[in-house]
Image 1: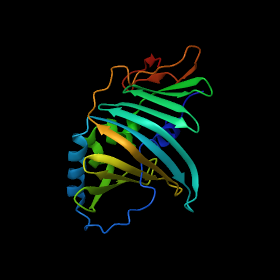
Image 2: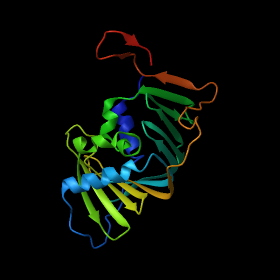
Image 3: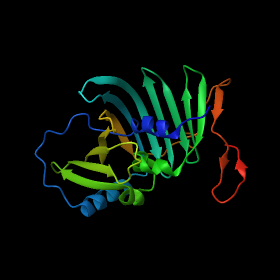
Image 4: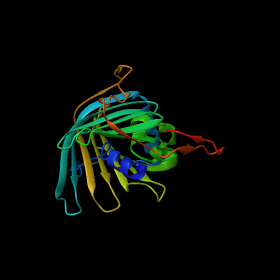
Length: 233
């Protein structure tokens, strides 16, 4: 049994994504895609680490709330993140840049999956990926509502993307809300009730801390692209 990375990254997008309801503000005219991209990249380059506590909500096509949870997120470039959903169903996700470990306390089980290039085409790129690739992967639009509030809309350029659009809202230099819409019209939203940028994390922040006796399920062996050598995860 192995973790389907598509399903995992989609669940994790629900880790990184979202404005549940459109901003009812008078917006400035859209800027050009190039200007919007440049502003987003410049803003994200200033964020080396991110940490925050969030409320996550999901609604269906009829705007009915189907799920609500709370948790915390920590991320650091390049490729490191920690995601902990505390309620109603606890789950902890670690990434050390090479492997992603998903721990389910209720099941006393952890699944380990190698990170693939596809993760760059998810919202994770905003926090821990290479921001220089954003323009290759997404069309970017920007609306500035006032001197402090700005909203970026990211639309994937590839059909195989796990989502249709992603909105991210900043107030000043702080990320406040994210909003992701999937192909079925379901919306997942994160509202950060607390956030900090560029904190220094302890070295073991992104190292899985699994209780003794945890059932560990590893991904199938990985075969490198330039050889036939099989490498165990």
